[in-house]
Structures are given as structure tokens and as C-alpha cells.
Length: 259
View 1 (cartoon, helix red, strand yellow):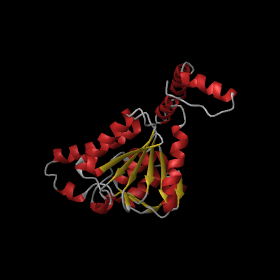
View 2: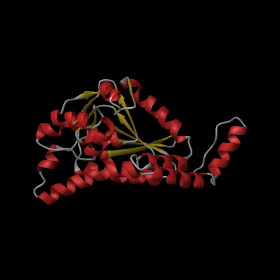
View 3: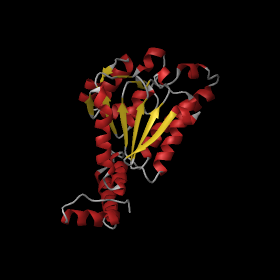
View 4: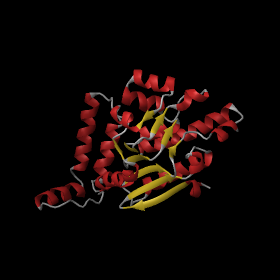
């Protein structure tokens, strides 16, 4: 089942993971959650992949938890395990060494909203709605919503969006810093792929170190400077750095191999 609910394609050193439950707006059943985790692991360890794109089939990106699946959880422990397993998706996105881009083609509600903003970059189609929909059904945020939303928009705005479950259109989400850019629906894929291709041409080791430290936002200046010196010391000894110098001197694009 995991093979059916998450499609895994590769193009130009980019892995495209497509949630494939379009009839339910790609809501998160246990099969979809487990498939998503499996494919993220696959992308992380695939030597041909340098960037990962997440998107949804049909009219939705991800409508959050599948209500039928949630209603079948009979015990507190079953419910905790389901939510914790869903949270693993966000942890993998955050911790994997490769940049992850959300390509939000349709509604991103509940956990779908939170997973989209957990990605390193987020691009959305015009008019797409982002909804912290938990309050509408008597629930509270999961999949890192408390962590990512407040860090991006501030406490007051995060509380407003969570308490009211007010839908945000992509354009407002862009204004708030939740979305990097907004494109016409028919241009979203190619525009997102263009960004991904640009990133895929960069040095993988440098990207991994950038992502790790940026995700440690809030560290002290002393700790940041220590990390920078250690990272630069390592990167200055790589083949990629030598290739970068050579390409600069020869006035050509570098070809990085991740070594």
C-alpha cells in the first residue's frame, strides 16, 4: 500500500514525492504516513538525489489527518502513536541533509499546513488556502505546528490563526513569510522545479551544513561562530571547494560531486 499512496519520481537530481490520495485531498491515513516516511528515507539515501519536492495529487496538497482513520483509534496509546508517527515526517524533513521544498498545489489544512511550513522552502499556487483547521473539529495542532508557525509569524499571529482557524490564501501566507513565492497554478510545477534545479547544482556538503545551522536558529552568537569555524574548516578541505575555485578562474559553472 505504501507504494501506491506516495509516488516517487526523479528528475534532474530532484526527487518528487507526490501524496496520492486525491479523493480525500491527500489526508493522512496510517498507510500514507508510513509511505511518506519510507520515501523520505529513500530520498535521503539516494545518491542521485540532491533536492526533494513534496506535492499532492489532485486538488489538495494535504488536508491533514484522515478523519475516518482518527475515529478508529480506540485507546489513548493508539492515538498517541498515530500522532507521533505523523510527527516523524516533520522530523525527517527538518533533519535530513538535503533541502526539501513544498510545492503546494491545493489546500493545506491542519497537519498539511504544518508540514508545508516545516519544509525548507515553500511555493504555492495562486488562491490556495492554508488553514490551521484543528479548532474546527475540537483538536489542537500537531506535526510541529507550535514550533514552526510561531517561529515564522510570531506568537500573536500564530495564536490568531490557531484559535480562529481562519483560512489564509497563498498571497497572505506569502506576506506573512510562510510561503517563498506564489505562482499561477499552471506554472507552479515548472517554477518550483527551476528553483530545485538551481539548488541541485550547488555543493551538497555545503548545503547540508547550511541547513543544519539555519535550522539551529536561536543559537547563541558564540555557538554559531564555533559552528561556522568548524564547518568552514571541513569545507575548505573538500574536492568541491577546489572545483569551485577552478570553475571561478575558468569562468564556467562548477560541477560539484559532494566530496
